[in-house]
Amino acid sequence: SRTRHQLGMNFELPLVRLTERNAYRASLIAYQRARRNLDQHEDEIVNQVRSEIRQLQVLAKNLKIQQQAVELAYQQLESSLETFRAPQTPNQGGNPDANAFSLTQQLLQAYRGLPQAQNQLLATWINYHIVRQQLYLDLELMPLDARGVWIDEFSNQPSGRPEGLEPQQQPPEQAGGAAPRNPARFVP
Image (cartoon, rainbow, N blue to C red; front, side, top):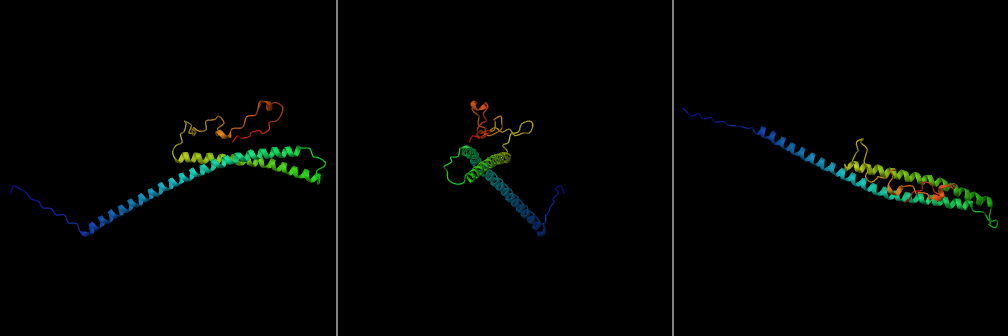
């Protein structure tokens, strides 16, 4: 009479265990789905960074090519101008008016080609910097100053241009009355 015994029995119907099992399997499926989604997002980010790096490399090569194209446009303009200004000898065969017309057309094409080459160089340079900034942003390597402006450690020139795009300095003898031969020529 001094002790008290108690017997408890916990009965779970198979129906309750089936619900628990289904909930556990559903949580496993949700976990696996979330893990696959995470892997997919990581792969997308890696592919995006790889494509941005490839695009940056292509734009860097295109930038060098465009610099050479501007140099060639300057040389073509100079050559056309020298040919146009050269005196005509009377012993040359053919129509002198047709020769003058072709020289004028050649000079005009050279004058048209120079701004086109310069515009393509500028567009490539801008695209290069856009892709570079996007890559830095994606890699979370973009340091900002107090104003929220990107601190670009590679572009520390006062003009903000990369090292290869600085205008060529004119020699002092051309600074006088004569017009400079190639104003704003870019040094490759």
